[in-house]
Length: 456
Image (cartoon, rainbow, N blue to C red; front, side, top):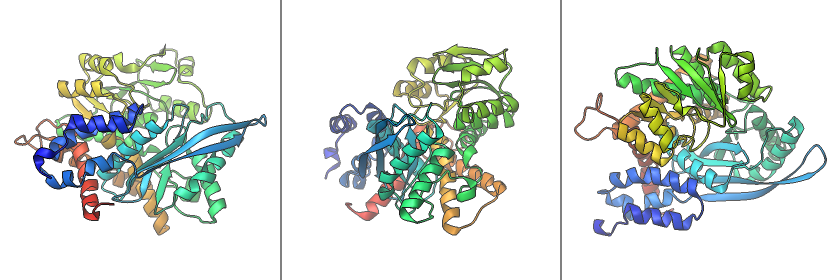
């Protein structure tokens, strides 16, 4: 095939949209990656000849299934479950399971696609996958959640395995849900294996896994600032979300001397002008996980704070922004507000929390912007270490795991700068387009493995 015969970026995206009608999240994720990859592969004939990007943008398989369960009132309930196995060129499929009423095939395909590049960036041998259901665990009893998880795993078990596909937790799936699913897998298969990560410490889980995604995002932020000759100390930060990722990101910012001004949930955000210290963050963790309460309740305990209903925190002046809630929570106008109010760093703790317009605003303003596929890879990195511990039947210490996490995040940062700094600019001080760097670095490892296999 001659270089002149290559399909261009507009034609490529038109094909993606045609093959995936109505799947806007999936199309958005491919668009964000492909615009950088097309520039990178322009003069690399082999990638074109073997249609590498086209193949990565088509999942290896999408498994869809019915999940029937019985609620506490003896009503039969029916949900839909999925597992998207996007690419296993560099290792077994790896990615979380999400339980949320907004889960669709499009959302899971976008997450599995992103996960492929994220896992590649860690340097570990992990492919990309994602799964979930439109089941809503909020308001359900423990027994209802147990019955649903057992029914979900009764179908999923045939598609996963420690050398095939290793799911983990995600939104709506924490330690409780992982334990129920692992117990059912063990009962069906009569095997005790590392088929799931995020397990309890009593049955194969890893220390530091709970903190890993939030801590890792802030480590990435710290490395971005360090490269720019700055640090976190004395900076103000707005954080969205109030779950595991958000609270641990807030915690690490406080450890490093920063001041966290906001946390949020689906009903709105809390602004605390005095800052969320470690005691307040601990209260939020307890309230959200054990009591399953709302962030609005925070102002009853700390009355100097204010709750803003049905709003997001991106209008609050800050130095640092750390979106840790869900996809597309920062839109173009939100991004403009952040830039206008003096924000100098945005680091994504969630998956694709900034839409394409928002990403363009941050890039044009040339602020430091850490995309989720790089910045929030700490969770899957620790999951990979949990898999290693399970395989070797060993348990590493917290100190060792914290150091491994720190080095993994530094490695991800360095891979991004390798491809994100323009030719001729200083690798140490020149402006780094972290989105471009993450996309190309993540793509190259997977693409080269696919080339080695031939057409499969």
